[in-house]
Image (cartoon, rainbow, N blue to C red; front, side, top):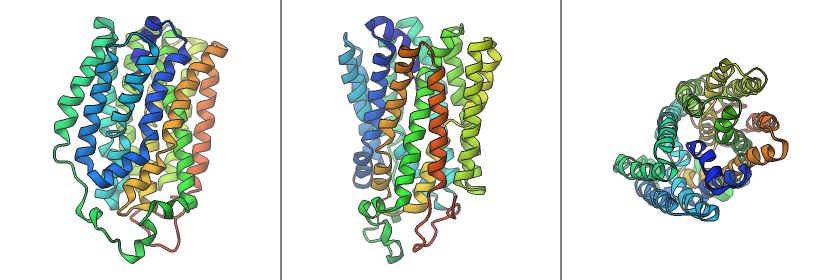
Amino acid sequence: MAFAVLYLPLIDEFGASRGAVAAVQALVLFIGDGAGPLVGHGLDRLGPRRLIQGGAAVAALGLLAATRVHALWALALTYGVVGGLGLAALGSQVNMVIAALWFPAARGRAIAVADLGTGFGAFCFIPLGQALVEARGWRPTLLVWAALLLAVVVPANARQHLPADHQSPEPPPSRAADRTVRAALRAPAFWWLAAQRFFASCAFPLMNTHMVAYAVGQGIEPVAAATALGAVSLVSMAGRLTTGWLADRIGRAPTLTITYTSAAAGIGCLALLSLHGAPGWLAAYVLLYGMAQGSSGIIASARAADVFAGPRFGSIFGWLSLLVGPGEALGAWLGGALYDRRGSYLPAFGVVILALGLALVAIWRVREDRSRPAAGRGAGPGR
């Protein structure tokens, strides 16, 4: 998310269009989540400690290399390709799988608590990044980010591991459907979950990549715009906890319907900023949209674990994440491309609301395999 504070400085330095610079972030997202099957396989084979620590080292290397480039294509190679590969190994996919497997009876809440770090990290990094960019420039900012990856992520995962029963080589007969990725690929629930993840991935990265640039274009100071984006992540911490609690109480699909309605209302408030210019609309966006930020991953991973939890869940969830990268890349790029073509972000906001609606249709279509016992709470029809 912190790429948003680099966006305008990179446009100025490289003299490129918004769509071209947004393509760098699109590449990070495409590779980061497009590597989902590889990451899932690595999680099952290597374990989370080696996977996450190795990913942090690769991501730091990509950021360090990016500080030395002087062409947009080189930035795409270092920040986009190398950084994207590293970040793939330590992103939400891995952490949500770990949480889902450790706490099967309270998956929604466990995933939400584990995912609090995402919201808090963005809240810290976005204002920090904006301050560093204004004081020192974008290159020193990347140096600080690389150092923090090595200083925080590597030691924090020194004792990370999966529960012992996940490593059992032979699942019980009643869980035979969970044994292979091939069996999951034959289940309609897999494809509805994949569709939900794709459409959600188009929506939220578009907003997160372009929200600062949009707000600056409406007369908001860059520091205030970056602070607002950081505040979205702060509000999302309450939203994530609420999402996890509701998911275990009323079900997965009803909870996502509530959070996406809140997101759509927030986007409407942001659009009104261009008509009235009152900062109150930005504050309303932060509150309403922030409560929905992160809900997609929590609900998708909990619902996937309801249906597919087992010894190969890491690999299965990796394949479920395969369309996340293309969706995020499409969203990040499309926001810039539509602005280049129409001179406004309002058409892009309409695309976001449409994508959220399609994601809701998909999550409501996910059904259990009735030949198998339910896996924990929240596993009933439409849940």
